[in-house]
Length: 563
Image (cartoon, rainbow, N blue to C red; front, side, top):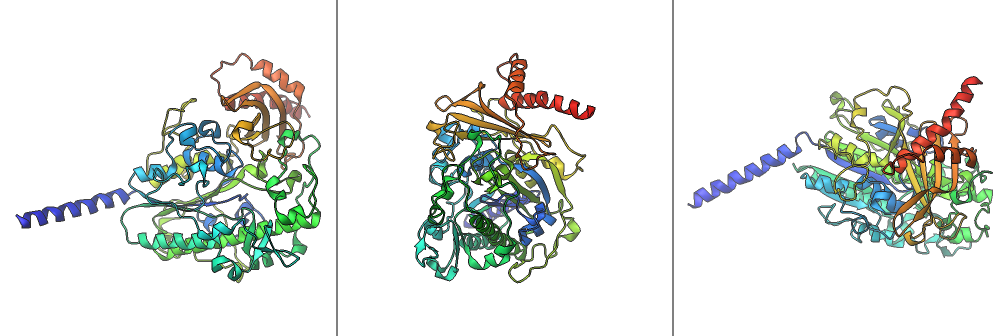
């Protein structure tokens, strides 16, 4: 009898191993890397100033999407939207004080989907925005197999640790430090890299597939970074933004007064007037210098993580995704930080490394991601062979990652989908990995939005609480245009009034890539609204705005053709 039990247990064990092997066969591990406040200021996106060799190396072996846009330029709403593949008007997360499962619906997240498919899922650093917006648990246990890891040294991020010109410690914006003098002799992203590598080592010989999400805190402010990275960007080589002034015809509701920047000790000393007063030019140069240095510091952590993936023999069957939650203004339009609908605030990097697809199978097994230390290896060169120029969105990430990993992508949501736990409001981009891009797609659209408490800049304009939102700026980005309407919004009913137009913006990107010349016309807009007044009520706002843009620009194209 005892022998039969032992045989039965052995057969059960072998059966379990077989199921694990089958589960992994045809499915790729996923390493999902997210930066914080990173605009596409990277060498692989054509930036000639920023030094980002490790991300550039990843891009050279990936498919790179050159025009990717966030759904809201604020951490919590953008991350909730990306990770559920639902737009902010569906998650109803517009601030830091709302959790989508309580506020709107019990929507399945990207890591939750992988977890339910047999993956071991883990979060390191900042993936969901911590606090209320992820239920004070980073959405554990829904999304993660184990509790999320947060680097202990992040506790000091807002403490007085930055040496000022007076020799005292301050809570500064600019905070390049000697790491050995910091609490614990470390920094948050250094700790997150170490933890992620530890997890990879523990899984190296495990048959079960994994989904590891690693969120780096930089280049988010404060710029508390190792001081040696400043040497990569001599201040005498820094330049101002190409359009550092507030555009003449920019509606006041569209302007963000960068209050989080103003609250730092070193910025307060400048006595900059609210809301438009410009930061002194010499300090502007230093902000740009520190942002770029923070990018290079974060790039080094990406490099260490990828080189460990490589050394552990995991690069051949692990898909790597790299992106950011939104961008960051560096003085363009006289603005700083995020909190707007402009390209600089909404555009993000997005790339997918898929072994056997973005890199040929005959190259697998070679050293894929050797670490490049930019502080000692200043010369490097990579080429992007696989790029997509057409517009995509962060809501596209969920279905694309699922599909490319070997899972079934979620179905597309209906126009109203509050009761649907699993569906996508984005597009599955998997087909783009196997087809060449055939020129520009004028139908491809990205939608972003931003809430405001009033028509003019207020102290809470950047991050208004939901109850204070009076206006919602809906922005459409196509290949040729950016079109934004600022509409009346009721936060109690979550309803937008499409006929209550507070302001508008229209930019022709071929002539005005910096979005500085607003050609929106109230008169033309009123004509368009009348033409579209007969549309049935169920037509989505996105569809309505797309039709409005077609009407508004049809005349422009005709006039250009005659000229």
